[in-house]
Amino acid sequence: MKNRFILMALTAAALLALAAPAFALPQVPVDKFQPSQACGCHSALLEEWSRSMHAKAMTDPIYRLKVNEANKATDGAIGPFCDGCHGPVATMGGQAKDLSKAAVQAQEGINCDFCHQVSGTGTPIGNVSQILTPTGAKRAQFDDALSPAHETTYSAFHESAEFCGACHNVDHPGNGMHLESTYTEWKEGPYAAEDTTCQDCHMTPGPGETVPNAGTAAAGGPQRQHIFTMTFAGG
Image 1 (cartoon, helix red, strand yellow):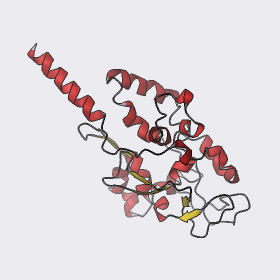
Image 2 (image 1 turned 120 degrees about the horizontal axis):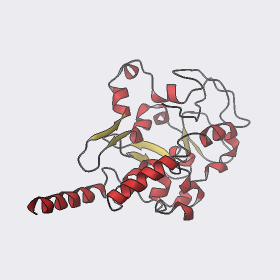
Image 3 (image 1 turned 180 degrees about the horizontal axis):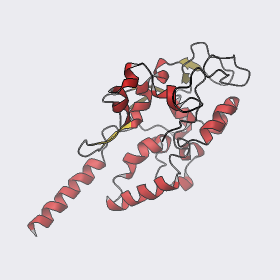
């Protein structure tokens, strides 16, 4: 009986810990983010993104199955932690619990406008440590971008591995155990030493580092020496 009470107390403590992840996304209204279909000027990139796991991060059947199982096992405590990475717009806008009633951009998983309004990361990097500046200005790696549809802002951060690491390092919210260490593995491995970033391999047309990838970022835009693809191809 004594052991049973100890187990119950430990379980309760674990649930309380899970309810307060290491990084809590700010509350941001969903309407601060455009649906990705509004990015029609970038039709080729939009098509690539639409087939990616980023686009399906919130609606992927395997994810829905596993997060539902985890919620049942933790009385709903784990869901907000998982959804923070898989559906940041839905999480920040309070629409993650019932996607059937959520706005389009909340259902989109890693929405285009979420990534392009990220301005930095907190430390330690991981567990959704992104810093957001949701003003509507779109941030990317070009310092001469102009758009008739929205404000543009140069962001060297979008070319860094830390941009990806803010989600692709995941530590257990209760005990800090490393559940996913993709960014740390990169940082401590040979690619970081060679100045090869995540984007150089996972946002290019073929396996491995296939740069430069010449093209245009938008309809009517200038020819660029290198355009990142939005496929985010991985294992």
